[in-house]
Length: 606
Ligand code: GCB
Image 1 (cartoon, rainbow, N blue to C red):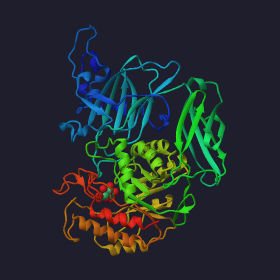
Image 2: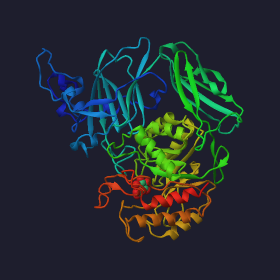
Image 3: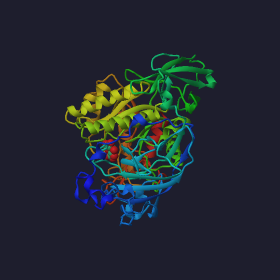
Image 4: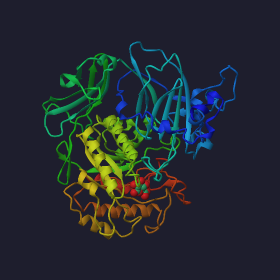
């Protein structure tokens, strides 16, 4: 039936509902196809792309991607698209700030780019998209390559066999919110649309180092553990093993690793390097030392700069390289006016420098994986990080597709950043109600995280039970650190309840207050009782700190939030589409009175 209605036979798909089924069930681009890109030759596809909103999904419904402009008799037929003549938008970028009429657009958008490519004989090429929100479908030279879900993690697809000298790349990026997604329909940040991180073609030889992970062993003092995964393509046929070499010149390391064929076809190598820890300069925020690491396999070479550090808990204490550490932090969204979520390297540096100036050694990157440069810069500048996936508020916890999506986003984030010393905590979610379905969903996420990486701590931001004044969340069993969000002084007025909750804390695990805070309008002054004034916000911070710091099991605080940020559920005449809980304005210039409270308190903690 569907076949008879094809556009190229003179009909449009206007009469069917199920035009999308084959895509829903089709090729899913996932963490399995992510390829390490560090130090490899790449051709950037950033810049101007032709763009049009696609409100009716016509690209798919009417098969525009076939680019049929003539009938079988070569007579011109009418068509409703003209990719190369459309307006342009910048990539990386969000569409919302590139044209007035796209400002609040939520839906599908079509991106088109023509480019020339000089083939690399005998090599392979992967298209890498840093992130695009939320669903992306890819066609290259009219061939469909698959779809990716999730707005904040990178993905790769191999394009070796589709590339020609002159190429037509077509992407559908759709930020329609839907129930089964991560996050779901409702959240407290702006749903920017588009390709908001860089796009590039990454060139590799036939044998590709897919990923590697090098870290200080969790338990053994003088050991650096490693694992390597190699996709040997045609080189791998009939082979049982491949040799890879890890080189760390400064440590005189040249380790030859035999990677063995795994069930999925990749070649996997695991092992450890013994070092005298006295000779190893461990990474910490004050001395963020990084080693140059090179991994080679056949002719493939990848390079990275990696710091070695150990993060662990010991009862209610968090230890960094064996020493107790207090996490002086703030939450931060990835946003800058004018850039939306497509922040630049300078924006990221500014965030880190602002946090340092405030006295922070830690940032909670909420509520989704931020640009991969953020952790690279934090490695260099010395800032510990909490990274999380947008398992936020209500989700379809009993939907297997939702789990698959969440688990894939978590895997993509971990594979991308597990060589970053700065990242010390993976978080599996924020403020989700403790139902059976949610418990099993999130428990499985903690298992996924632990299977991919044992060198970090696992946490989540949990809710408290106001009735019993207790933290009642079964997920806590699965966590290394208990994260708590509480807004006493703001949404709930009685600080006495907060004191009771903390007195009732029984876990032998450290706690981080992952959110607390209050709104304050930049420059609005009044008494401490007048909500929305800077004085009121500052006073709530003072009272909060006074209570929190009298409980030694609280080993970190990340108040909500460093900068004001856009959120379409904040529409009062004062908020005007912004969440105003920043201690600095969205302009990143205006420091509110609460800023100085945090600075003073953090300056006293060693
Ligand atoms: C929360 C959420 C955070 C919100 C914040 C607020 O609990 O985790 O995303 O934006 O409260 O401002 O109320």
